[in-house]
Amino acid sequence: MKKIFTLFLTLFIISTAAFSQPFAAAVTFRTPTVHFSYGKRYVETYSFTTVERNRQIANINAAYNQQVREAMNLRIAASRKIDLIQQLQRERNNKIEAVNNRFLDYRNKHNYNHYDRNFNWIK
Image (tube, rainbow, N blue to C red; front, side, top):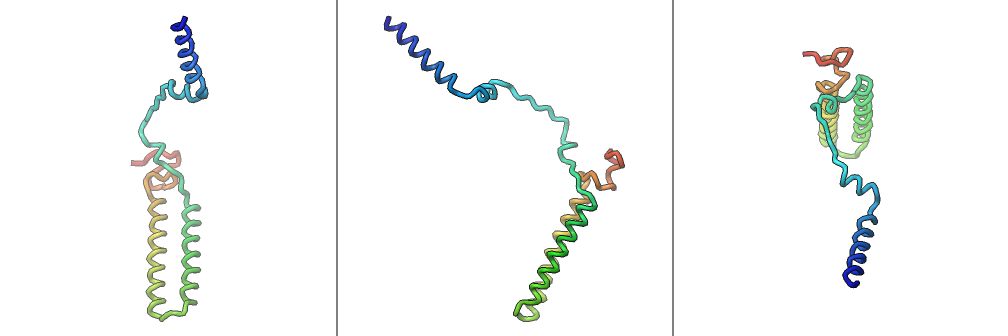
């Protein structure tokens, strides 16, 4: 009798522990996940149109103009202003170059140097 009672108590504790977890957790642990990879052709491509590129360049130029106006109003020596403006020019040129490189990248679907009108790769 003692063994049967101990057996039922053990089964009760194990069953409550097993079924106390949510159903979704049990499914995720028991369901195998299968991933098929057909290369990274579609994952790596992105859309970056000329309109977006021109808008980003216009935003960069507007921010640069505002920074130059603020630098001109500073009360510092003229040589320091020139150095500051040259630094701002370098930053602006780097940002514009990054935008152009992103547009001219071969993964861009709107880069017409590498894709035809059906987005097929031109070799």
